[in-house]
Image 1 (cartoon, rainbow, N blue to C red):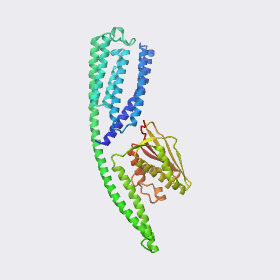
Image 2: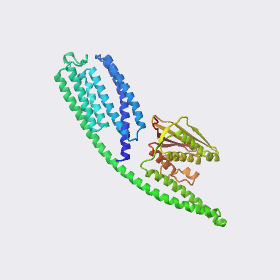
Image 3: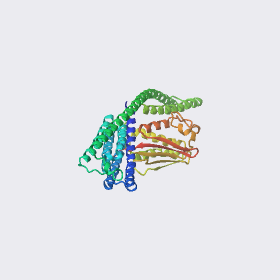
Length: 450
């Protein structure tokens, strides 16, 4: 299915792992209050020390997996990520089952109605894992329940009776009852896995069809972009030749020319320069879209931004503008250096172009969260009408006031910026107030540096 399927599957597994860790925090809180409520409100006898120890263990190992998952996020996109994340999911669910069995044992064994909570884990396993792994988890749950029943009936493990909930005369450690409970529980767990995996498999089959269609469309789009790239390259070469010839004539190398002819040739040369700029932007956009994979390097975003801002200082000073930077920390990102430089240069150039003399441009970075860095380029320029903001990243789109201020734009700069950011699995957006300025934001995933 290719790159798109890989990205979608990674994103889904990543989201589900985060969700699993999140609900475990709620589970730990719930277990704590259930223990207190059962013991002191319902007056049911419980072994508090081992149960609170189990709750502490739940918090500790969930914290461990929280940090493991954070490190896994930094590896997302690498070939080793999916197998590592799958193993992590398998291990987490297995530990959950062992801990649930621990709680069940110290809170009444098979007489505890919370044995039905094993069903929830089967649903989660069926959603997160492969069919084989889900059935493995069901077998593990059956084995744990059987172990509790057998070991308590034989006296190997002490039965912790739920005094105040189940009468002593009905103490559920007799073999006949336990066998019945185990048969019902085991069949319920396997049926749950069967039904859930059947539904999930059908959904995944439909998803694969959609992914295949998306991949085909993406391939067609790359083919189209490759064609446009080749045509644009040929047009650019021809236009550059024409411009060179016109410049030779204007320089007087071919002899003197009348003033009227010089004016017409100068206009033609200027128009060819604008066409070359347009074709160059079209070529860049097509090149990005035609790539299925970009060469990546780990760089210091601070060093790169400082160098790019320095390169724009002269242009800003010519318009009596100031450029300031608020970059106090080195953020390491894994990017295509050429593409990111083009992205930032594009945003800074736009800020300079659409900011009047005396205005300010500010470049800033900050940690957006544990996994990505946020970059912003702000100006005090003409701004963008609110109703036009959703359209500014479309091909060839230019806001009305931008067309009035600068007639020579191609309308492709922000499309190129959007393609570059999305090819790095980031996001880009803008905030603006008409007449007061604009701020463009984009995010980049942080690189793992150790």
